[in-house]
Image 1 (cartoon, rainbow, N blue to C red):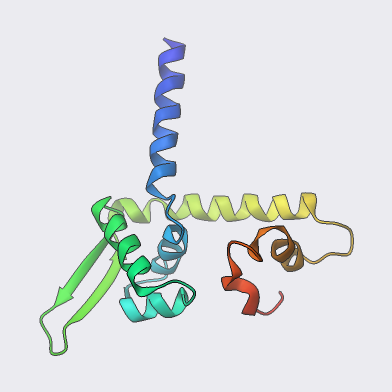
Image 2: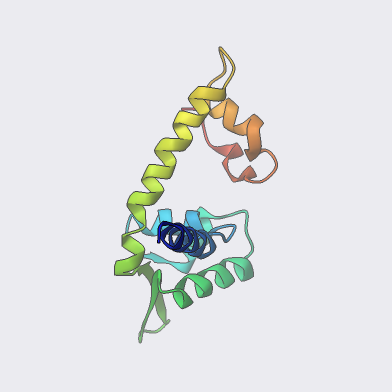
Length: 137
């Protein structure tokens, strides 16, 4: 019975990983945790991705039930994205991941190195160059 619970827990973990595994998914969810956003606002936040990639990620998140897309019959048409109820339940998980990541940085950075410099050197320079323009904190 214990093996079945382990397998179930592992399967649930993999499902969660798959639901947030898109390159920009966490950034989109994090942005929407601060409130509704229009496409242009999201694209400005994710300025290093193409409009088509952002559209694809938004469609996947909507299909998976994590965000909702509201279309308002105005001229011009207004579209807003927001978290669904189940999407909102993911935000504390993202905060926990952020906290854990900060501990990871503290644990592995070299003496005298700032947290931001560690992040830049560790992986951002290759995968998330988005942050290179952010000021040091």
